[in-house]
Image (cartoon, rainbow, N blue to C red):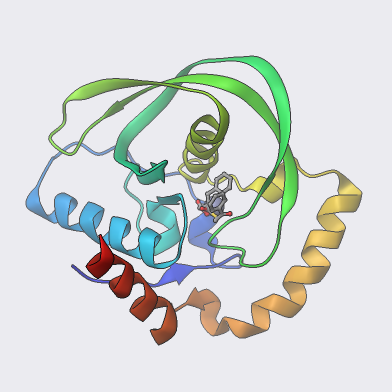
Length: 186
Ligand code: K1U
Ligand code: ZN
C-alpha cells in the first residue's frame, strides 16, 4: 500500500465532476486500499478520489471503525431535521465551519466488487457521506457558508495555503509514524 499526496484548495481537480466507475479492476482496488491508508494516516473520517488527484467516482469513509468504500454513490433519500455542525476537510487543513445538512440519508452505492448496497445513515456517518459525495461533484463545505463566514474561512486559508506549495499536502513523517504505531497496537 502507498500513501497518496492530498490536493488542497487551489487545485482545480477539487472542482471537477468525477466520472462513474465502469470496470472493477485490481488497479481500482489498489487505489481504494491506498485511499484508506492515506485517510487513516491523515486522521480523517472520509476521503474522496479528487482529493488524491483522481477523477473516478470513488470515496472511502470510516466512522466508528466501520470502513466502507462507496463507488458511484447516489443519495436516494435526504430527510430528517436539518442540523448544523462543524466540518473540516483534509483538502482545507485547519479551516472549519458550521454546515447545515439533513440528518438522515439513504445512499445507494457499489462496493469494491461492483455489487450494489444501501447505507441508511444519520448523525456523523450521514454528514460524512454527504461531504464525500459533494467532493465527487466538485463541491466543498465552504460553499455552504454564509458570505461573512466564508470570508473569514478564506482569510484563514490564505495564510494556511502557504504551507502547501503546488496545492499539494504531503503527510509529515510524524503523521505517518503515528499511524503505523497505531496499526501495531491494534
Ligand atoms: O473529505 C474530507 O476532507 C475528510 C473530512 C470528512 C468530514 C469531516 C467532518 C465532517 C464531515 C466530513 C475529515 O475527515 S476532516 C477530519 C475531521 O474533521 C474529523 C475527524 C473525526 C471526527 C470528526 C471530524
Ligand atoms: Zn473534504
